[in-house]
Length: 306
Image (cartoon, rainbow, N blue to C red):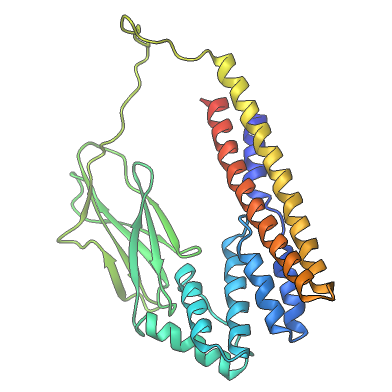
Protein backbone atom coordinates (compact mmCIF):
# COMPACT_ATOMS: atom_id res chain seq x y z
CA UNK A 1 0.00 0.00 0.00
CA UNK A 2 2.83 2.41 0.84
CA UNK A 3 4.34 1.84 -2.60
CA UNK A 4 1.00 2.76 -4.14
CA UNK A 5 0.83 5.94 -2.10
CA UNK A 6 4.40 6.78 -3.12
CA UNK A 7 3.55 6.32 -6.79
CA UNK A 8 0.52 8.57 -6.41
CA UNK A 9 2.64 11.27 -4.80
CA UNK A 10 5.27 11.03 -7.53
CA UNK A 11 2.70 11.11 -10.32
CA UNK A 12 0.80 13.96 -8.69
CA UNK A 13 3.70 16.22 -7.75
CA UNK A 14 6.61 15.56 -10.11
CA UNK A 15 5.27 17.24 -13.22
CA UNK A 16 7.36 17.40 -16.41
CA UNK A 17 8.92 20.74 -17.22
CA UNK A 18 7.31 22.91 -19.87
CA UNK A 19 9.91 23.24 -22.65
CA UNK A 20 7.71 25.58 -24.68
CA UNK A 21 7.63 28.15 -21.88
CA UNK A 22 11.42 28.15 -21.62
CA UNK A 23 11.76 28.51 -25.40
CA UNK A 24 9.19 31.31 -25.36
CA UNK A 25 11.21 33.23 -22.79
CA UNK A 26 14.30 32.89 -24.99
CA UNK A 27 12.45 34.18 -28.06
CA UNK A 28 10.99 37.04 -26.01
CA UNK A 29 14.48 38.12 -24.97
CA UNK A 30 15.35 38.15 -28.68
CA UNK A 31 12.31 40.43 -29.29
CA UNK A 32 10.72 37.80 -31.56
CA UNK A 33 7.17 38.40 -30.30
CA UNK A 34 5.32 36.48 -33.03
CA UNK A 35 7.38 33.34 -32.40
CA UNK A 36 6.97 33.79 -28.66
CA UNK A 37 3.19 33.81 -29.01
CA UNK A 38 3.27 30.58 -31.05
CA UNK A 39 5.35 28.89 -28.37
CA UNK A 40 3.08 30.18 -25.61
CA UNK A 41 0.08 28.70 -27.41
CA UNK A 42 1.78 25.31 -27.19
CA UNK A 43 2.94 25.94 -23.63
CA UNK A 44 -0.60 26.61 -22.47
CA UNK A 45 -1.75 23.19 -23.74
CA UNK A 46 0.67 21.25 -21.52
CA UNK A 47 -1.61 19.50 -18.98
CA UNK A 48 1.02 19.40 -16.23
CA UNK A 49 1.15 23.19 -15.95
CA UNK A 50 1.08 24.50 -12.42
CA UNK A 51 -0.88 27.59 -11.45
CA UNK A 52 2.36 29.58 -11.36
CA UNK A 53 3.29 28.40 -14.87
CA UNK A 54 -0.12 29.40 -16.22
CA UNK A 55 0.28 32.85 -14.68
CA UNK A 56 3.72 33.19 -16.30
CA UNK A 57 2.32 32.10 -19.68
CA UNK A 58 -0.55 34.61 -19.57
CA UNK A 59 1.66 37.45 -18.34
CA UNK A 60 4.27 36.89 -21.08
CA UNK A 61 1.51 36.48 -23.65
CA UNK A 62 0.03 39.86 -22.72
CA UNK A 63 3.44 41.53 -23.03
CA UNK A 64 3.87 40.19 -26.57
CA UNK A 65 0.35 41.16 -27.57
CA UNK A 66 0.95 44.70 -26.36
CA UNK A 67 4.27 44.81 -28.23
CA UNK A 68 2.39 43.90 -31.43
CA UNK A 69 -0.29 46.52 -30.83
CA UNK A 70 -3.03 44.01 -29.92
CA UNK A 71 -4.37 45.81 -26.85
CA UNK A 72 -7.74 44.00 -26.70
CA UNK A 73 -6.08 40.57 -26.74
CA UNK A 74 -3.58 41.67 -24.09
CA UNK A 75 -6.43 42.82 -21.85
CA UNK A 76 -8.14 39.44 -22.33
CA UNK A 77 -4.92 37.71 -21.23
CA UNK A 78 -4.67 39.94 -18.16
CA UNK A 79 -8.32 39.21 -17.37
CA UNK A 80 -7.63 35.46 -17.38
CA UNK A 81 -4.51 36.03 -15.30
CA UNK A 82 -6.41 37.97 -12.63
CA UNK A 83 -9.18 35.37 -12.62
CA UNK A 84 -6.53 32.80 -11.65
CA UNK A 85 -4.96 35.05 -9.03
CA UNK A 86 -6.67 38.35 -8.12
CA UNK A 87 -3.58 39.30 -6.06
CA UNK A 88 -1.27 39.03 -9.08
CA UNK A 89 1.12 41.93 -9.60
CA UNK A 90 3.64 42.88 -12.28
CA UNK A 91 7.29 43.85 -11.69
CA UNK A 92 7.47 47.60 -11.17
CA UNK A 93 10.37 47.99 -13.62
CA UNK A 94 8.28 47.08 -16.68
CA UNK A 95 7.45 49.70 -19.27
CA UNK A 96 4.67 52.22 -18.43
CA UNK A 97 2.66 50.90 -21.39
CA UNK A 98 2.52 47.39 -19.90
CA UNK A 99 1.82 48.57 -16.36
CA UNK A 100 -0.95 50.92 -17.52
CA UNK A 101 -2.73 48.15 -19.44
CA UNK A 102 -2.52 45.73 -16.51
CA UNK A 103 -3.76 48.23 -13.93
CA UNK A 104 -6.58 49.33 -16.23
CA UNK A 105 -7.84 45.74 -16.45
CA UNK A 106 -7.47 45.21 -12.71
CA UNK A 107 -9.34 48.43 -11.89
CA UNK A 108 -12.13 47.43 -14.27
CA UNK A 109 -12.48 43.99 -12.66
CA UNK A 110 -12.14 45.04 -9.02
CA UNK A 111 -13.18 48.32 -7.37
CA UNK A 112 -10.51 49.99 -5.24
CA UNK A 113 -11.95 48.67 -1.95
CA UNK A 114 -12.95 45.21 -3.21
CA UNK A 115 -12.53 42.30 -0.78
CA UNK A 116 -14.56 39.08 -0.72
CA UNK A 117 -14.65 35.89 1.34
CA UNK A 118 -15.91 32.71 -0.31
CA UNK A 119 -16.58 29.44 1.49
CA UNK A 120 -15.09 26.43 -0.30
CA UNK A 121 -16.09 22.75 0.01
CA UNK A 122 -14.32 21.05 2.91
CA UNK A 123 -14.36 18.04 5.19
CA UNK A 124 -16.78 17.77 8.09
CA UNK A 125 -15.90 20.24 10.84
CA UNK A 126 -13.55 22.34 8.69
CA UNK A 127 -14.12 25.80 7.23
CA UNK A 128 -12.13 26.59 4.07
CA UNK A 129 -12.28 30.21 2.99
CA UNK A 130 -10.94 31.79 -0.18
CA UNK A 131 -9.80 35.38 0.37
CA UNK A 132 -10.26 37.44 -2.80
CA UNK A 133 -8.06 40.42 -2.04
CA UNK A 134 -6.77 42.04 -5.26
CA UNK A 135 -5.56 45.23 -3.53
CA UNK A 136 -3.93 43.43 -0.57
CA UNK A 137 -6.06 45.04 2.13
CA UNK A 138 -6.43 41.94 4.33
CA UNK A 139 -3.91 41.39 7.10
CA UNK A 140 -5.62 38.48 8.86
CA UNK A 141 -8.80 36.41 8.87
CA UNK A 142 -10.63 35.57 12.11
CA UNK A 143 -13.07 32.72 12.69
CA UNK A 144 -15.72 33.47 15.34
CA UNK A 145 -17.46 30.35 16.66
CA UNK A 146 -19.90 29.62 19.48
CA UNK A 147 -21.26 26.31 20.73
CA UNK A 148 -24.58 25.84 22.56
CA UNK A 149 -22.87 26.24 25.96
CA UNK A 150 -20.64 29.20 25.06
CA UNK A 151 -21.62 32.61 26.39
CA UNK A 152 -19.19 34.47 24.12
CA UNK A 153 -17.72 34.01 20.68
CA UNK A 154 -14.43 32.13 20.45
CA UNK A 155 -11.85 33.61 18.08
CA UNK A 156 -9.28 31.85 15.91
CA UNK A 157 -6.92 33.99 13.83
CA UNK A 158 -5.10 32.98 10.62
CA UNK A 159 -3.03 34.68 7.93
CA UNK A 160 -4.07 33.81 4.35
CA UNK A 161 -1.67 31.52 2.50
CA UNK A 162 -2.01 31.72 -1.30
CA UNK A 163 -5.42 33.32 -0.75
CA UNK A 164 -6.74 30.50 1.47
CA UNK A 165 -7.51 30.00 5.17
CA UNK A 166 -8.58 26.74 6.82
CA UNK A 167 -10.17 26.61 10.28
CA UNK A 168 -11.17 23.72 12.55
CA UNK A 169 -14.54 24.24 14.23
CA UNK A 170 -14.69 23.27 17.93
CA UNK A 171 -15.88 19.70 18.30
CA UNK A 172 -16.35 19.55 22.07
CA UNK A 173 -19.86 19.20 23.43
CA UNK A 174 -23.10 18.44 21.65
CA UNK A 175 -25.41 20.59 19.57
CA UNK A 176 -24.86 22.95 16.64
CA UNK A 177 -21.91 25.33 16.32
CA UNK A 178 -22.58 28.82 14.98
CA UNK A 179 -19.79 30.64 13.21
CA UNK A 180 -18.83 33.51 10.95
CA UNK A 181 -15.57 34.70 9.41
CA UNK A 182 -14.21 38.24 9.38
CA UNK A 183 -11.38 39.70 7.29
CA UNK A 184 -9.36 42.41 9.04
CA UNK A 185 -7.12 45.12 7.66
CA UNK A 186 -3.67 46.20 8.77
CA UNK A 187 -5.06 48.30 11.61
CA UNK A 188 -7.35 45.54 12.86
CA UNK A 189 -10.51 47.02 11.38
CA UNK A 190 -13.15 44.75 9.88
CA UNK A 191 -13.04 44.74 6.08
CA UNK A 192 -15.68 42.17 5.14
CA UNK A 193 -17.48 39.14 6.58
CA UNK A 194 -18.76 35.72 5.66
CA UNK A 195 -21.84 35.43 7.85
CA UNK A 196 -22.44 37.81 10.75
CA UNK A 197 -23.01 37.74 14.54
CA UNK A 198 -26.76 38.13 14.04
CA UNK A 199 -26.85 35.81 11.00
CA UNK A 200 -24.14 33.18 11.53
CA UNK A 201 -23.51 30.01 9.57
CA UNK A 202 -24.44 26.79 11.41
CA UNK A 203 -22.62 23.47 11.64
CA UNK A 204 -25.00 20.86 13.02
CA UNK A 205 -22.30 18.16 13.28
CA UNK A 206 -24.22 16.09 10.79
CA UNK A 207 -23.03 14.01 7.90
CA UNK A 208 -20.85 11.60 9.90
CA UNK A 209 -22.09 8.02 10.11
CA UNK A 210 -20.28 5.66 12.47
CA UNK A 211 -19.33 2.30 11.02
CA UNK A 212 -20.53 -0.76 12.96
CA UNK A 213 -17.92 -2.63 14.98
CA UNK A 214 -19.17 -5.97 13.63
CA UNK A 215 -20.07 -6.25 9.98
CA UNK A 216 -23.54 -7.51 9.31
CA UNK A 217 -24.24 -10.57 7.19
CA UNK A 218 -25.15 -9.85 3.57
CA UNK A 219 -28.84 -10.20 2.72
CA UNK A 220 -29.98 -13.31 0.84
CA UNK A 221 -29.28 -13.09 -2.87
CA UNK A 222 -26.70 -10.31 -2.49
CA UNK A 223 -23.76 -10.39 -4.89
CA UNK A 224 -20.49 -10.82 -2.98
CA UNK A 225 -17.90 -8.07 -3.36
CA UNK A 226 -14.73 -8.58 -5.33
CA UNK A 227 -12.01 -10.49 -3.49
CA UNK A 228 -9.17 -8.29 -2.20
CA UNK A 229 -6.70 -10.04 -4.52
CA UNK A 230 -8.73 -9.08 -7.60
CA UNK A 231 -8.94 -5.46 -6.45
CA UNK A 232 -5.21 -5.43 -5.77
CA UNK A 233 -4.43 -6.80 -9.22
CA UNK A 234 -6.67 -4.25 -10.89
CA UNK A 235 -5.07 -1.50 -8.81
CA UNK A 236 -1.54 -2.42 -9.89
CA UNK A 237 -2.67 -2.70 -13.51
CA UNK A 238 -4.18 0.79 -13.30
CA UNK A 239 -0.96 2.20 -11.80
CA UNK A 240 1.03 0.51 -14.56
CA UNK A 241 -1.20 2.15 -17.14
CA UNK A 242 -0.70 5.50 -15.37
CA UNK A 243 3.09 5.17 -15.48
CA UNK A 244 3.00 4.14 -19.15
CA UNK A 245 0.74 7.08 -19.98
CA UNK A 246 3.08 9.45 -18.15
CA UNK A 247 6.11 8.13 -20.04
CA UNK A 248 4.25 8.27 -23.36
CA UNK A 249 2.99 11.78 -22.69
CA UNK A 250 6.48 12.99 -21.81
CA UNK A 251 7.90 11.40 -24.98
CA UNK A 252 5.22 13.05 -27.14
CA UNK A 253 5.85 16.37 -25.43
CA UNK A 254 9.55 16.12 -26.29
CA UNK A 255 8.71 15.10 -29.87
CA UNK A 256 6.36 18.07 -30.12
CA UNK A 257 9.20 20.37 -29.09
CA UNK A 258 11.45 18.79 -31.73
CA UNK A 259 8.76 19.23 -34.40
CA UNK A 260 8.46 22.87 -33.46
CA UNK A 261 12.23 23.30 -33.78
CA UNK A 262 12.06 21.65 -37.20
CA UNK A 263 9.37 24.13 -38.22
CA UNK A 264 11.70 26.98 -37.28
CA UNK A 265 14.52 25.53 -39.38
CA UNK A 266 12.35 24.74 -42.42
CA UNK A 267 13.25 26.69 -45.54
CA UNK A 268 9.83 26.37 -47.16
CA UNK A 269 6.56 27.69 -45.75
CA UNK A 270 4.76 24.43 -46.51
CA UNK A 271 7.30 22.42 -44.54
CA UNK A 272 7.08 24.87 -41.65
CA UNK A 273 3.29 24.58 -41.53
CA UNK A 274 3.46 20.78 -41.64
CA UNK A 275 5.93 20.63 -38.75
CA UNK A 276 3.88 23.16 -36.75
CA UNK A 277 0.70 21.13 -37.22
CA UNK A 278 2.56 18.00 -36.15
CA UNK A 279 3.82 19.81 -33.04
CA UNK A 280 0.27 20.84 -32.08
CA UNK A 281 -1.05 17.32 -32.68
CA UNK A 282 1.69 15.76 -30.56
CA UNK A 283 1.07 18.29 -27.78
CA UNK A 284 -2.64 17.43 -27.85
CA UNK A 285 -1.98 13.69 -27.60
CA UNK A 286 0.48 14.33 -24.76
CA UNK A 287 -2.21 16.25 -22.89
CA UNK A 288 -4.69 13.39 -23.38
CA UNK A 289 -2.17 10.85 -22.07
CA UNK A 290 -1.40 12.95 -19.00
CA UNK A 291 -5.11 13.32 -18.20
CA UNK A 292 -5.77 9.61 -18.75
CA UNK A 293 -2.71 8.67 -16.71
CA UNK A 294 -3.86 10.85 -13.83
CA UNK A 295 -7.29 9.21 -13.84
CA UNK A 296 -5.71 5.74 -13.92
CA UNK A 297 -3.42 6.66 -11.00
CA UNK A 298 -6.36 7.82 -8.90
CA UNK A 299 -8.34 4.69 -9.74
CA UNK A 300 -5.41 2.42 -8.99
CA UNK A 301 -4.71 4.12 -5.69
CA UNK A 302 -8.36 3.77 -4.69
CA UNK A 303 -8.41 0.05 -5.51
CA UNK A 304 -5.19 -0.61 -3.59
CA UNK A 305 -6.17 1.33 -0.49
CA UNK A 306 -9.87 0.41 -0.44
